[in-house]
Image (cartoon, rainbow, N blue to C red):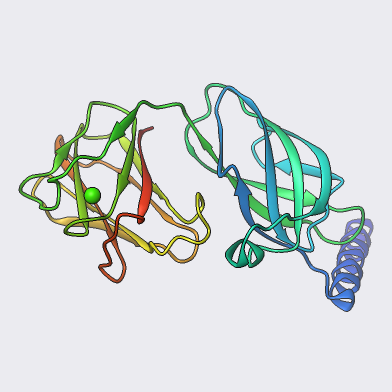
Length: 250
Ligand SMILES: [Ca+2]
């Protein structure tokens, strides 16, 4: 009992010292973005993990099925002011994801030489057919019907500034709807909003881009046709408000 207490005390003391040292240097790292924004299940890919004052001798995923190897740590090569805001460093990692992992955000940690680890999340996705967004799809009464299963919509918010899609779902299925705009172009003006409506057209989830795009994961309560709306937070519309909408049946 006593030994246990002493061990706990020492571990706590060590972590307090480590955190204290990092704070004293003002160098506690912050992770902000991955480029590319996702890694596909069943693949090994090199991804740049970008943030402020990042360093890593190792990257460790909470899910032990994902393996990561640090390739190099260096300055982030920002191409514009928006990219500069993501931070000064990039940790390049080779990430290997097994084929049976379902799409979603997977937590990991940068383990530095010294000091506390820094938390991050990486999106794992699956290959899905691409579908072009087609107007008119601006009203709940006339949505664009998507093919069954997982697809990726390639669209732009021009015209009436709202794009509505319809998917056929079954009770008990979990779906993930995720918009990519800012993560593909840090300088985009699009502040995407996603809204999911049930077969009675009642809104069941609404999410707003808060600097990192947004996603809805939802378990369908009933069979039927569900609507997913994409629009801008300020109701802007323009030909350059481009996005990708990942529709995934998990
Ligand atoms: Ca459109």
